[in-house]
Length: 117
Image (cartoon, rainbow, N blue to C red):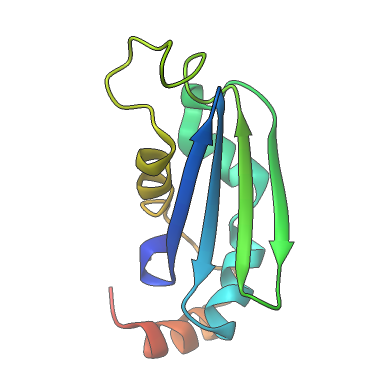
C-alpha cells in the first residue's frame, strides 16, 4: 500500500527547509499513518535528499502529520542548481512511500475505506 492511498499532502518551502503536511482521508487512515510514517521512515524514503534534521509534529484533531525537513532543498530554491527540489515535489514523493502495516486487520479495514491497491 502506498501512502497516497490513505492521505494527501500539502507542502511548501522556505530557504533550505521543506515542510510537508500529510493529511489522512479519515481517522482509521490516520491511525495507520501515525504508526507507520515515522521520522526514520521519512529519512529512509528521501535518502540523501534530506541531509539535515527531520521533525514530525502531530495534529490528531485534524488527522495531520507535519514533517519539517531541514537542509532538504540544496541550499534553497533560488540558490540550487538542482532542477526540481521544491517542497511541493517532495510532498508528492513522500506520498509514494510504501506502508507495510504492522496490523493486517487495521490495513484491511483502512483499505476497505480508502480503496484497493
